[in-house]
Length: 403
Image (cartoon, rainbow, N blue to C red):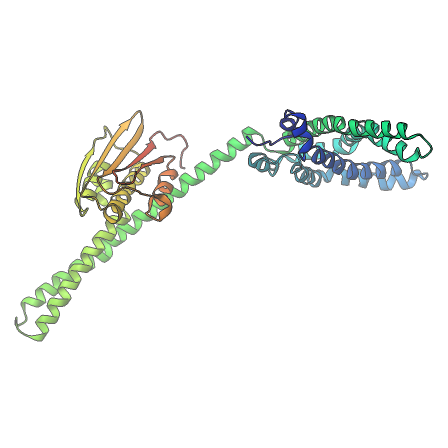
């Protein structure tokens, strides 16, 4: 397991902790917070201590107002600094989140007034002994060799000890900043619910468009092709059988019938009417009947399911059967569907060669995405040599409204 925070780093064995980058990262994190806050605080003190009270009266209020309004800027800078202290993917995501404006303003004021002083005190006290001994060593040119060696050894030994308080306070400081500036669990939960609702609305809108296209094709283009086929059939009866015109009309009649067949298949692919009228079992049986291989269907459901779930399950079965026909070299397949504890479970088996790979472009990745839209999951078992089992599980409880 990787080390993602300063406190996790301190819990390591001493030589691993000291050999890692965490002590230096912690020092950089604290120093990067001291410098800008100290500069702002020094400017405020200088304004307050102006000899002319009139100048201070006019200059100080705008500066204080600017300090209060700079909360979002401070918050953004603090989130940027958090990258020094947290390296895991979850921590990076949290560090980039947005906080509430009032908390940002308050945190910015606290940083300028107090936190940088604590940072400075921790850094100063932690490095006082090793830095002081080093400076004394550089100035002790007249001291004996034994004294200098002792001072050097003490400085070297004190430096690793200083790494612990620096890293501990940096960990606490970054945890405080993250708790204030990063979104809380409640806010993240609200965002997740809204994303789920938005996704459900998009799915509903997509299904409405599919049904509209199916209806337009069925009531428009299909009816015109039917009328054209009938007209060509009647025209063929009025022509001499051996004439050139009769041959052309016969060819046109056959092409019209083929176009009508292809259009009907297209309409079924957009949204099968049998699914709307009779439900998932009848729609799966219809899809199995159109498969080029023998497909046994055993789909028994106690009730009609929500429309979105029926559509997702139906097209999952169609995609699985299409994959079987194209890639598996199977002679027989089966579809079984049951409702188990409010979860729709659909299994598609075949006796093919197996070895199905979602990364090979067989349509399984798209099938998994379709199932994920309705909070379902796709399970695949396809050892080399077969058989292949595709299992789809879709919860049928509506936990988030789509409206």
